Image 1 (tube, rainbow, N blue to C red):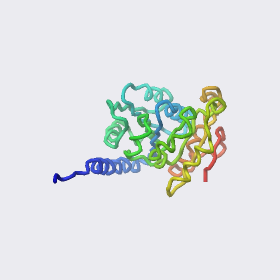
Image 2: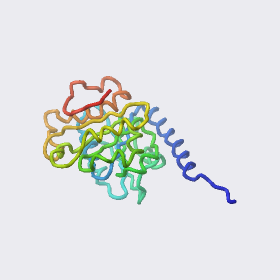
Image 3: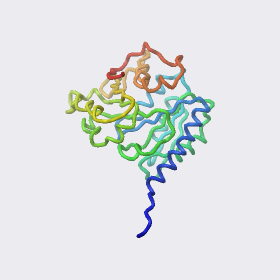
Image 4: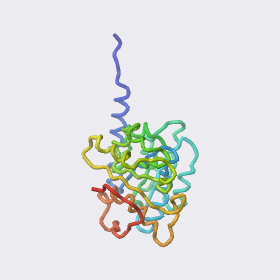
Length: 247
């Protein structure tokens, strides 16, 4: 009988070891890193773009974007004020630790406080490949429907926060919020998942940046960022979002 080789296990094990090296690089530079994941069109780039604007002058931000092709999203992050690096996977449906390692060689981590990695839009593969970030955020959106946590449990199980985007569409799209939230009770995990609803105002959910309203984007990520950032970066007076289950 031919000998079986657990190829998948070996690939993931090698990736995990390299991810630990990536995290060690972040730690050595005192940089906090976040992996932002979602399906295509859920609003990853919008969240990142307005996070950058909301933290302008307070954090030095680097952004690594993963897409099969183009540099559209990295260009948006750069225009918002971040140092941006584009990774084109050429067909791969996720980023991995090797790709991130190569991107880090192009970033001056000593000049940054926060690195946001935007993974390839996908609700399957990114869940299996660690990148070396400290926290992971999943962006869901109302138009996707309320059943995604049940159809893609692996993705929802491995994140620290879920941001529900495009909540201005709730009156027009069937979406059972209670049903969506119940997925957490069926998933064994040590730490609670924070579920956050950003309220950006306007019909496209991104207006209201003037007058400091961009601070709301920081509030969206604060439950994820606060444990890994110095207290001086926390603004408890920011309240331009609707948050629940933050225990």
